[in-house]
Length: 146
Image (cartoon, rainbow, N blue to C red; front, side, top):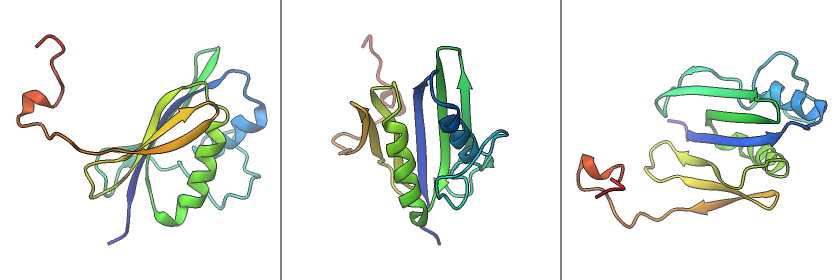
């Protein structure tokens, strides 16, 4: 059995992102118009369809609403890919306009992920601690009016 991780990333990028940066992102997403020239062996986020081990679907989208770009990625990742994944996340962290939680990395057998947080042009990992486990299905999403 392979060590598979769930990797999720959601962040915004400025609309002024240079064409070469957009081309690299598109290449990693397996989109047309992408161009790779930064030493990556293969696209990190080109897989689509059902996930093999983490459940749900594998996605990778880059969309523009005019003033900015929105990036969403959910992929399965292997430890062999962590160097390239780390390099890409740090590269995006230096460019994102998003502050706060931008994603997570979770071992497929774990219930608690390591959260990725963007602040001041950098991304850091925050390790979560489980202090309370919901006792019933009604506690999974808190009732703000209770």
